[in-house]
Length: 350
Image (cartoon, rainbow, N blue to C red; front, side, top):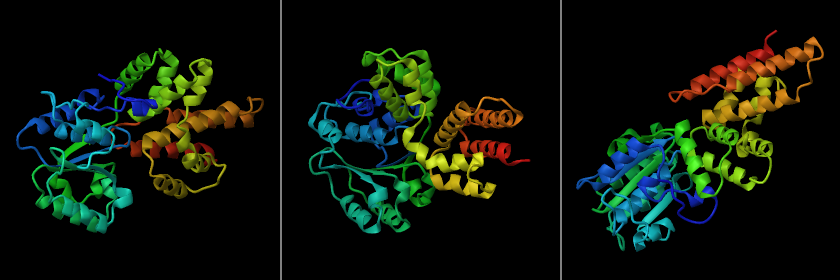
């Protein structure tokens, strides 16, 4: 059940604080509940998967569950005891959430390594969440591995990563491993409708479909788009649709790729691939921006008054059709590279 837990924008207000709040990862959540409720559960966990799927949120719920003084029988934290409240506010002395991209050096991890040997001071457990864990240096990962070998009782480490293969195998093998997936369209639809109703807003069908498309399976993206729709709820449906049709912050990063494929920035296919790989953005999100860019270009194209303008519009239409296809869950990068090549050919052949 998705509940409003605090004030703020929708992403903050509806960020899950219990396992029951988490949408679309049912099998994983069931397994994690079972693990935490067992007597001999792991002290190291690895939560991995694409950005925006709920890895760090789940890790925080795990921290609350392990520290809760009035935990329910199914593992849900009460959200009201002192430990729960302090963890939710990031003020608990035995809870630390660390962005490994910022503090991934060997010296910082060595300090954590020492702390893993000391028992919790105030809470039931001491817990570290290392977000973007794959960005730790090899030396830092080795130091963390050594620290996990003789952790004190009641001390936990949760690694969150979008690229688990960059984590050394010996450290991965130390962890209980969970692979988070993108949410289905049905899960996103249910999330948006439930949150919309709690906010007193019935999401129009066309707006709902646009939000589902823009979200690319990520609940965070869905709630950001729903927030835009709520802000414009007094405006026309057309205005709402035009506002949520793009993930604005991604467009500048992908615009060069659009121009290269289109031919307005003459490039070899090798240049296009190099640019795509440099973006470090999920394929689904790149696909979304490419679709939006080619759609906008088609809308601005001169009406077909001669063969040249007709041929150009036809090329834009074909390119758009490639990026309107759903990407597969398995190896989506293969599909988008194929679609980019087909679009590239439209503008460069003959």
